[in-house]
Amino acid sequence: MKNLILTLFTAVFISGSIFAGGLEVGDKAAKFNLKNVDGSVVSLSDYADKNGVVVVFTCNHCPYSIAYEDRIIDLHNKYNSQGYPVVAINPNDPAVQPGDSFEAMQQRSEEKNFPFPYLFDEGQKVYPKYGATRTPHVYLLQNTGKKFEVAYIGAIDDNYTDASDVEAFYLEDAIDALIDGKKPEPNFTKAIGCTIKVQK
Amino acid sequence: MAKIKISITCILLFFTFSFLKAQVPILDFEGLSPYLSKQNDSIYVVNFWATWCVPCVKELPAFEKLNEEYKEKKVKVLLVSLDFEKYYNSKLLPFIDEKNIQSDVILLNDPRSNSWIDKVSPEWSGAIPATIIYNKKKRTFYEQSFSYEKLEKELRKHLK
Image 1: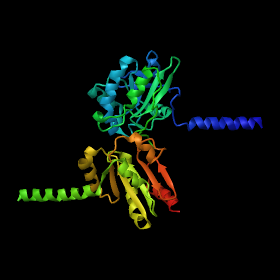
Image 2: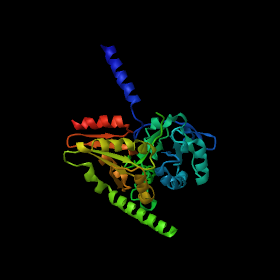
Image 3: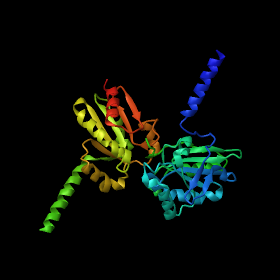
Image 4: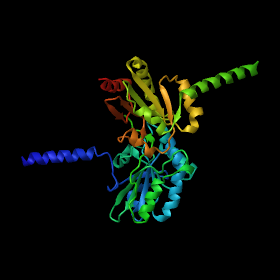
């Protein structure tokens, strides 16, 4: 009887983990070791001396990502010196979306002079751990000293079409809150975005 | 002669697009809301898509076919485009014209998506394509692509 209960419990626990669907606010951030457009490998652990990391799942082709490119650059320029650098990760499979190939990423990074790493999620193993469902999709991580914890998930702001008509600066407010020693509120928002391209 | 031909073409294009414009309203979410909560005998199949969204465009024929096959059975297909409003004339209308889209189309122009995504469905992450099938009794949300067979199968669940 005890064995049966233990087996059932384990089965439920494992299935829960498999179908977890990604990270929630408060969870420990998933590690990554991914290739950057400059050929180097960038890991989450490289940021151990920072206050946090702004992980943005984004890509070349998606009109929403394109609409946010300049804002993501501005965010890095504003918050990197305050200990919150941006790390961009392309979660798409180039076999499905050729516009998001590594070469295309290198080109875009050069064209726009990205001041942040633009990493390729080769094998598409990292984005499912985070639970990213669209591009762009932000996971703001806070360095607690012992680990990176998810502090905010969601949209950059409330107006993808017009940067000059933003009313809610969700991500900036979230980072500012962390800088002030507070918790982001809201800590979870949604936005329209492109699906992540996976082979079926 | 050439000038007359050009003028006639321009006039024809003008009328085509004027016709199309009248057929494709631009609404904010408040304007769209009533289409997501009709209380009558019909079944509504509402698809969220965009001209630049490859999987969305790929599945449009399935929705068009459903619209055609089930017209007489009180099934209404509504294609809600999330194209950027600035491309209404240059991309959306030409697309509808080129593909000869027969289903009703609305352009949802409301950038404050965090305020309405959950109103469409709390299950929705915001990625497109997404579809709702609903009637008075049943409402189901789908964050996935559809083949005609799958779409029809899901529709039939709401026909009961």
